[in-house]
Length: 265
Length: 225
Image (cartoon, rainbow over all chains, first blue to last red; front, side, top):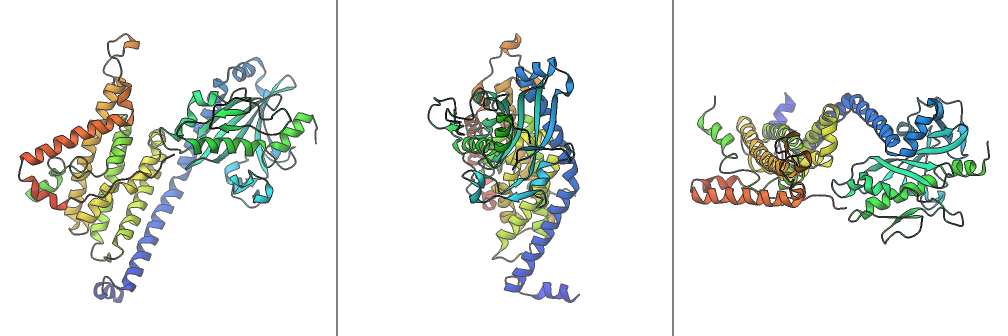
């Protein structure tokens, strides 16, 4: 009753009233938003999972080589494995299916913070997991393709994509951005198959063997350059930095190097 | 129950004082989500939910909201409601929420919601504020649906995804107008509707007394790649 009395008598524009009112509104709003988010999270996660599965299927369909490779071989030739990003070695004692990369990225036990000491492109992501999932396609026993999950900041959202490399681990077979929240009609053109097709047959490495794949704002001339999307320079650079990060030393670089050398752990 | 004043509160935004064409509030989303009727309809439902809830809550709290920080409090309430509505869309109509992308979250900056809170809900009792919110939501929805059906019909020959005008490539006679699917076409359609709205107001003198509730806050998109 005293509270009600105070509310009714305190000057509405006084500092105390301001403070109490703002705190009350903030706390009630925060509770409303967070409880709704927790309540609806499982449903949203289920939709996202379904979408990821569809985009994996559409990725395999969209690359004729991949589809025919999967058709012509036994079903178990597409295998998913976990690798240790720092050493580039396969990890055997962790369940591949149970590994959740997005959750692991925020778990201090399973990821570490990146600093500028880790190299040029390292500050692209704030944290990076120790482990990461890769999908490998074998034809008999020869490695035909590697599918790497990659993500990184675009202009106003995180881009998630599949980067498919050929057996030489240098030639890009496809880049498929499957999840983003870029400006509709502008940055959202990263989804455009016509733009994604520009990545096909580009090389990660230049003639000296240095990582030099990237988006150019001029006309692409070398096999390491891809044209940027007109009007969405920052989204394009986001894609470029993402590919460079994940194929570089902080990403799948050690794994790719090891596979190129044929060096088992 | 529905007395004359209530009817007027609901009806005015539909007839003389349309939020989009006369008050010029909420133009940005009207331009952005109107390429198909389905997305426009979802946007209308989302905006109606946010506007009705925010007007009701803000009106109920109006005597306790300090004048100096009222905009902050209004925006906090509106932003929370928008996030909640966005979460509901993502959980229950995932496909459509993917197509609406950022525009549902941009309801926060939709000046229609803040405009009605500031101009009406802060000064009027709960019931009247809710009626005003319903009226303005319907006025907004009406414009959105007119623009969206025009664009979808002439841009693709379909309505709600069902073919109405058979396209040439499917053996019909209709040549889709690509222009209708581009943003400028919405400018033209809304421009025409604004003209019609103002023309009608000039012709009916009664409209002038309506204008005291009109606030124009500049509408702005937040993102440019």
